[in-house]
Structures are given as C-alpha cells and as structure tokens.
Image (tube, rainbow, N blue to C red):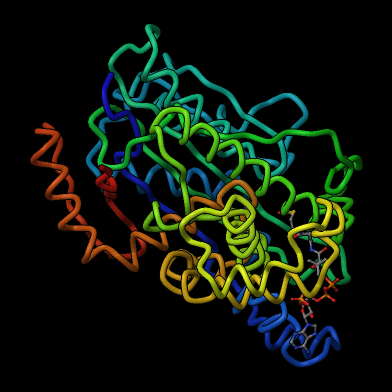
Length: 380
Ligand code: ACO
C-alpha cells in the first residue's frame, strides 16, 4: 500500500491543571525554576473521576464521531501506555466496549509498554500492518494514553496527563518514510516502575536526562546515515521544515535540538556556518561522555541553535508546555501542536499533495478543540 500514515488525530487531556507558577510557590522552589528553568506553563492531572482508561475511551469515541468513522471499519487497535492498570488485562480490551456494541470483535493488536516509547511502537505496528500482506483493508487505530505522576520532590512538576488517538491507513496526508527510521535501545535503570502498587516511577533525573540526549544523538546519527544511503546526500537541519520531540519538559527539548545542531557541526554539514565553527570548535575533541557533562557546550550550542529552534521547533511546543509530560502521548501532542500552529500554511501543502496523490479521501482542516486533520510535507 502507498503512503501509509496518519489520516486523523485527536487529543484529550483532563480539564484539571495546576499553574507551574503556583506550584513553584507551593513547593518552595525558587521563582522561575519550573516556568523558565523547566520551560513549563501548566500541568494537567487526572482527578479521582478520570484515569487512562476513561481518557482513552473519550478520545477514541471523539475521533470516530468527528471523522464519521464506522467502528466496524477498525481492523487493528494498538495501545501505547506505561500506566499500569492490570498485570494481564490490556487497556485495549477496555476500548473494545466501543466496538463490541457494533458487533466488531475482529480487531487485532494489544498494548505496548516500554516507558514513553510504547506509543511509537504501537504506531509502527499499525503502519507495518497496513503495509503488509496481513492487511484486510480496514483502518488501524493507535491510542497513546498516560497519566504521569511523580512522588513529591524535584520530578513532581514534570508530570502531566493525556490521551491521543490516531487513525492509520493508506493515501494518508501524513505518510511515513519508513526506510529512514533510526532507533536507539539500551539497558539502563534511569526510569522504571518496580513497585506495582505505586503509580510513581523510580527515577534518576540526571541520568534520565543524559540517557535522553544520548538516544537523541544516536537516533540522529542512524537517521543521517540512512538518509545518506537512500537519498545519496548528506542530511542537515536545513533539510527538514520541523523537528518534533518527545517532551518531558520544554528545557529538554531545547537541549535536544541544540544537540542536533552540535551533531551537524561535528559532521561538518551545511547548517554549521563560520560562527558555529568558531564557537563550537573548542568542544570538537570532547569524548561523548565529556560532551554530556559540559555546561559550556550546552549553553553555546543552545544559543547558536536558537534562531533555528524558533523556526523549526517552537511551533511544536504548545500542548506539551500547557499539559506537561504525557509519556507515550507527548511526542504526538507536540506533533498536534505543530498542525494547530501551522495549519494555515500547511493547507496549501496539503492541497498540493492532495492533487498529486489523487487521493480518494477528503480531509477538512479544522482547529476546533485541538482536533486536526494533517498534512504531508512535500519532499524533493
Ligand atoms: N529560574 C530560572 N531557572 C532556574 C531556576 C530559577 N529560579 N532554578 C533552577 N533553574 C534551572 C536550572 O538551571 C536548570 O536549567 P539548566 O539545566 O538549563 O541549567 C533547570 O532550571 C532545572 O533545574 P535543576 O536543578 O536541574 O532541576 P532538578 O534537578 O531539581 O530537577 C529534573 C529537574 C531532573 C528534570 C526532575 O524534574 C526530574 O527528575 N524529572 C523527571 C525525569 C524526566 O522527566 N526526565 C526526562 C527524560 S525521561 C522521561 O521522559 C520521563
């Protein structure tokens, strides 16, 4: 099947939230630590009447209704979550309540759990299914749902909660360049949930930040390598209109993009100009480990990357800054933010693609309640 990807996306987050400014005061943190230091505005949370099941039931019902999708037309349902509800029963089976009513129990897929990565695993599973011989012609549906709650202490302001649903099928306005995926997986105890009776993770904050940045570096290198192999030219930050990150808190997104900028400099790619070469030159010989510890490098690369960040990343930060970390849903909430912020310019892109792809499906761009149809970026 051609151009398999996201046909529709919908997001739900709880109406209850705490202002980070008020949380700073409440926690006795220094003024600006959560708002400027972490870069967050608000944090959503589930009250006693909501949880990951209710959020996902809401978002799936809402997507099907808004886009007029017959529940019988869903052939695969994949859930990404790291919020443990039951040690055996999947969240997917709770969502079956929506489909059983219509006589549809013939739906493949279960839950994927691997910290914040489960949502992406679920998405890849659905995309691969539609691209495969097993596809029966119906839609795939991906649900990312999490409630991120931390014990009292420095991690607490980095919580959040939301559920995202994505409809997957062919001739999609957002399609995947599946060959160019780059991954990084390793065995580390930076963030885990060994105590099943508690909703709190055990987290080594500093280690988790370094792990995140190492994974960003590694994925970027793998991606650049594959881009070179399949497209026959070197990739640089100039080659993509936007960069969307998993967003535990905004400061880490800023640091991650700066890290990509530093990678471009090390690979001597086109985005590294003379000023960058002069300012980053002193850091070129640092070992990998030293480079993660260097505050001077962090600050210098963030400053140099700022103009590109404002253009290529800032439009993706709206929902994560307002809602907080949504674990599996964070990356896709950042993506939804991009569509919300750029839909007027993306409409033309969509129209162009729409004509070129002579797609049979019709998509209406709407920004009502952060509910979107999406674009595909023109390449080449
Ligand atoms: N005004 C402005 N900035 C301030 C202020 C202030 N008053 N006080 C502190 N800051 C800055 C710090 O300088 C720092 O920014 P920098 O790194 O750019 O220098 C930032 O605020 C955070 O301050 P720290 O002292 O580093 O924060 P702390 O160590 O107390 O906690 C942490 C931060 C580790 C992220 C913690 O919230 C945590 O453990 N969160 C959960 C783990 C997490 O989200 N990891 C991310 C990847 S894994 C995942 O997705 C779950």
